[in-house]
Image (cartoon, rainbow, N blue to C red; front, side, top):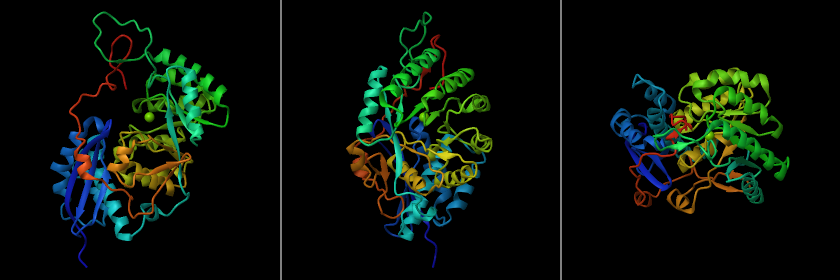
Length: 400
Ligand code: MG
């Protein structure tokens, strides 16, 4: 029997709920058989589109859809320069679509191809924010009443609200924050939230790499008494050598990874048992194929998964997260962004969350589809991202 081959690759850009999403559709030589993948790099979505249409598509047409691993390995090296966010996302779109196709060919949900379920559903966490500690605590209690047992707590977004900043004369506009004021406010917030909601709610917090390394060490020590489920991105990828300093000082569980591009970034942290949770954005690391490899590697070291799951992961990417969650023996928790109804209409089969758990459907492959006509009614805007134009109090550029 001749192999089923790739007949066409289409890139679908849509913006139904804030973030610009990139979804790839791989069509095959078998009529009606296609797969979907997530290639969402929301801030550079048009660059990913060009990488797929102009570079990957000519490389892929006519290839055997069954050879996922070989296709991934060759796609990663045949541009010679590798491990960057644009190309990793582009490759992910293809990789997830090929896994989706394989599941459809087998008549099985993807988690079956990975090795079957370790659990019936994935425990999720969602995001509580607020203007003051009281409002954060109220929002945590609202989610707990809905059945969530894990809640991420922030106050005033990443880095907090700037308050009474004194900027130099002539300082440009931007998303200002004060790292040291953010540290102090976060401790006050956690103190109040823990005292209000009690010990039974698992609390998480995302530093979003907003601190100087030594301040991150101090914060990790200071929050130890609040028994967080994890403290996320206390350090930037450029500062990962500082994780050892945090480990020497406290037992606060650490999560890291949404910005990772390359095995050089995650391998030493896993081998050194310097973090506890992997937060990779599956499309950003290149798709299900590398995620499967790193999950198995991390399992050997007692490091758990907590894949990135905000609104700038497409529902196709959330479905990929879920299948990995159901399979991985070392699953920890799954981030969940609570999509509005429109997204469920646009992406039939989007995973459903009930009582703090995300459930799969029993359709083959990723179990998700896209209404392309509806997606076309919400085109991606040409816009310059604002929140990522972060600045320190003196106006100098900072990591968002
Ligand atoms: Mg994060």
